Length: 369
Image (cartoon, rainbow, N blue to C red; front, side, top):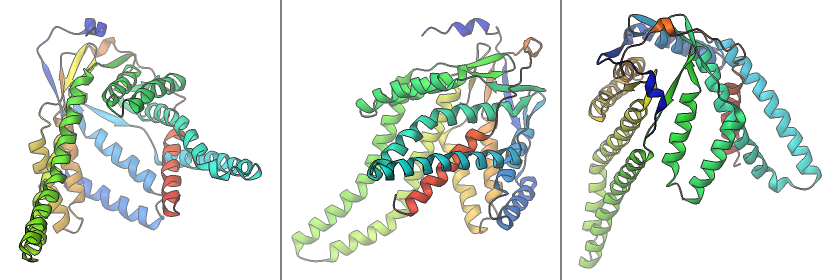
């Protein structure tokens, strides 16, 4: 595998760790204020709440003695949503008028679906530009330089191949997207890279699929066995035993399901960060194991349930901390060689489109669309 960016790698065996200094008790105050203000404002404060959470996470994440910073605001997100609703609303009205006038109402939904597909690359580009432009480390901003047409062409070509191969090509599509997004993500004037073997991701997908299929096949097999046995004996006793067995097996089934999902999420996280490079040096997240993640999820999930939601901020911080402190950077960084460069044109409009599209989709679902 040809990776020319490795020529920038430093000759070093040092491993740099990420640290997180936030705590559940400290975040609990932020959580309460966010919940209260979001409720009394009918959800409008959500955008400010989200910005506060991101700011808290960034400002408590440390790397090499320095902390990250988040510069986004709730007002930016809120205005972005209003603009997006206005634009999407105007487009929807115009399309409806044209479709109604030409008696093409039945084709309106497919047309809107196609338009939304063209919006997806715009949303991805815009969200990355906004997210990175509002993030900084050591007073140097991150930025994103991807272009709409490039990403649209990438998604169209590789998405088409994924469809005609019935999804088998999806790992290659995902790796292409990861590579494109990383290549156009910059810290100052230095960009990241993503280089991975899609076959490894394909193996993960197949293993996950086999696990899920086997898990759902087990209860069907046992119930069918009891039913067949009961019918052969002419009694309903075995059918009742089957029902009782299923009831007792529900916690085991949910536990296995949680374990498989968690294993997959942890594997994907390790796969991604294990193939990200900066200045020729790689990241890793080998400590982000499914076993530890399942333990945290179960422990804090039970805490949240038995405290009627009060434990939610503690669970959130614990999981975020585990994700951050599992990251490693292998090598040294000469920060004096990095020059700052800010993307002044980035806005929250793309995030607004995403939120508005989610809202439109939800409304369509509610009304049977």
